[in-house]
Image (cartoon, rainbow, N blue to C red; front, side, top):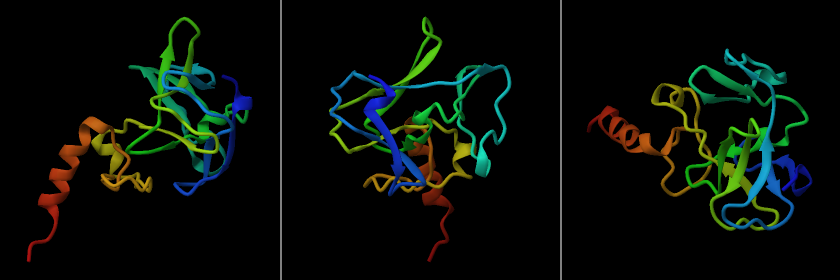
Length: 154
């Protein structure tokens, strides 16, 4: 459970992805998602205008843009193999396996975007039930209904 167990490399989902260098069991910590915490969301804190911020609790953000944080390359997926869990005692977020993960498999998690955020973030995870937008799992049925009723009629 160290950053030596993962590597960043080109992803078929988007840009760089985070890949397992060994197998992980369900519930096992994969790698920390580290960075300073702030009371304001970081804005375009990395080259290319990408934001690697997580809202830990309302009004408390973790800026994961540092090169020392390879977990920032974990992509979103509609059927993720990991989840991000905040450990209050350690003041650290951990990517944690939801199911067995094979060596060389891309590590993904649900970014948990709101409906409004999803409108600006297309999803390319390739899951059979992908809505085409990065959106939190509980909100996907509402987005599906919206998309179904907003399409032009014959």
